[in-house]
Amino acid sequence: MRALYAIIYTLAFCLATPYWLVRGLLNPSYLRTLKARFIGPGKVLPKMDGQRRVWVWALSLGEVLSARELVKELIDGGYDVVVTATTLSGLAQARAIWPKLAIFPSPLDFRLSTRRFLDLVDPDRLILVETDIWPGILMGLKRRNLPAHLVSARLSPRSFKNYRRISFFWGKVLRHFDSISAQTAEDREKFLALGADPARVSVTGNLKFDQPSVKASSEEKLAILEETGWPDGRWLVAGSTHIGEEDLIMSSFVELWPRHGDLRLLIAPRDRHKFGLTWRIVSEAFPKDSARRSRPGPSDSGARVFLLDTLGDLERYYSLAEVALIGKSWPGPHDGGGHNPLEAAARGKPVVSGPRVSNFKWMYKALAEAGAARTVDKSELTAVLDELLSTPGLAESMGRKGREFVESHRGAAGETIKSLLPPLELK
Image (cartoon, rainbow, N blue to C red; front, side, top):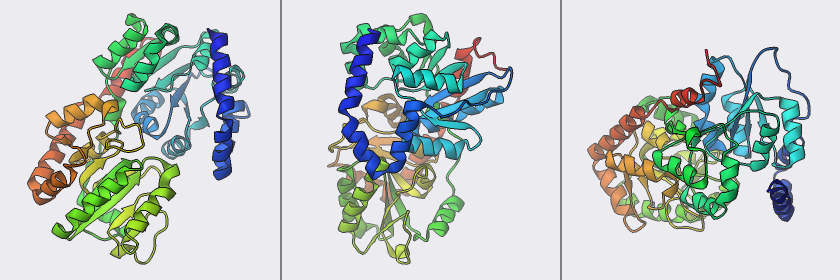
């Protein structure tokens, strides 16, 4: 099985080579990251005598944000923490959050890449956040008798369906983990169905709930408007959007504009590589009324539609919102599945999404039951937004309930740490 996997992985990588090269030509930093993923950090990472080193692996920006409280718990426990991320946005966010930690691109799943990374970094264990399970990495750790833990673990319906087709393989892979801490009981059942060891799979909650507790305030909104030069008013903030959704949201905005004269729209695309394309869509639709955060201009104060095309800022910019719209949930060329609504809910903002939220099914269902979120199809979007904008008390009530919901579910980081005891032996 190991040999077959290595052959399949190598063939898949070779077939993807043209894609890597095109990405590298468009963004040279991508090629530098790819090189580091091949050969590791480049030099040995010094290690203090007797200090235990934990390697925290987060796939992208979302997983990096999820890991914040967990990393803090580890540092407070006296561990030397090394963080890796796979995507450029994840790496940028990790370096911004933990400027004093060693941050590296995650190694590729070749045996040579894995061995070199482990030789240079010399971790005592791996903590993998949420997803991005690579068999070669786990095999490399097992050869060295190093523990591996999967935390805040989840499986989307699509991933579960694909994994189940070859569950005989994934069952063996999952048994390389010394522990799996699932987000929900449903996630636990999925891992068990794939063949994970029941004695090693527990439910500890979702690390996304343990983001720093920040309540949006009028002072924060004013600070954002002052630093950007953007106009005051009531804002719709569409976060983590994908191509196809921007047109829908802008169409609703155009319908709402005559009835809500002080309305502004902020669009924050999920994919940084689509910033340019999204800007073309926005600027062509609103040639005299659009602005982008990365290139401020003297006319921005008169604009009505704005593009947030800077990394790591969306959470803070939800403070502008009267209503938060969460993307990857309405029809488009993307796969759907939704994105994390908790950043907006934690800031007391009513959440509106499309119906395609299978990746966060429990979360959206629970928020809706708490009266903090609505899931609407594209034909209902304008009417729902009009209702919330016309009824401030309703929007404020939804926002308050969302913040209370998030606060009531905090604690996953602490429970996750407990699930790793006694191996971690935190002081």
